[in-house]
Length: 214
Image (cartoon, rainbow, N blue to C red; front, side, top):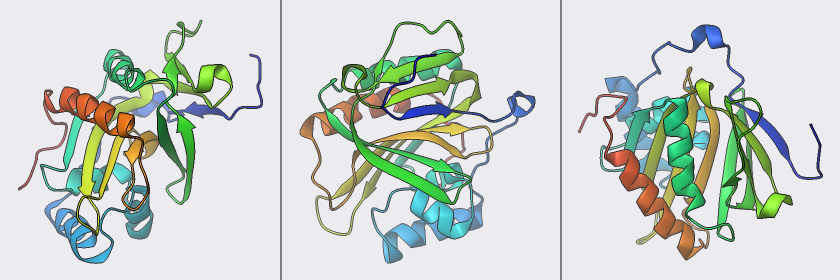
C-alpha cells in the first residue's frame, strides 16, 4: 500500500469475535448524568469530552442525550457506505472537523475537507475516503466493525450555537470516527451545516439502536 504524507488511519480495529455483541446504551442513571452535564456544566462540548470524564464508551453519552438531540441506528457495512455517501454530498471543498479517540482517553481533532468515497478497495470490507483530492487525510474504515451510527445536534451555551456530528461507533461503543459539521463557539462552514441536516434526516428515518427516553 502506498503511503502519503497525509494522515493514514485504520479504523474499527476491534476483534471480529465481538462483532455481534449489542452496543452499550445509556442506563436511566447515565441519562440523567449526561443531560445534567450538557445542561448545567458544559453545554455544547464534543462527545469525547464527557465520555473521557465519565470513563464511559462514547456511544453511552450519545444515547443519553435528549431524543431530539440524538438519533442512533444499528450499522451494517452497506449502511456505513450509504451514510458516508450522504457525507460525500456535503462537498469535497467543504470544511469539517474530524474527531477520533484512542482507548477512550486520547482524542484527536483536526480540521479537514470532507473525505470523499474512493473506488472500491481490493479488501471489500474497507471503505476508503480521502480528503482534498488525495492530498489530505486518508481514512480506511473497516465497515463490519462499525456497529452504530449517530447524528447528534447539541445546543451550545449561547443562543444559536450548535455542536453537530455524525459519529461511527465500534461494537463496544468506542468512537471509530466522527465528522463534525460544527462545534459550539467555532465558526462553521455553512455547507457542512446544510449537509449535516440531510445526513441526519437519513439517520432519523431508520429505527433507533437504543430505546429513547424522554
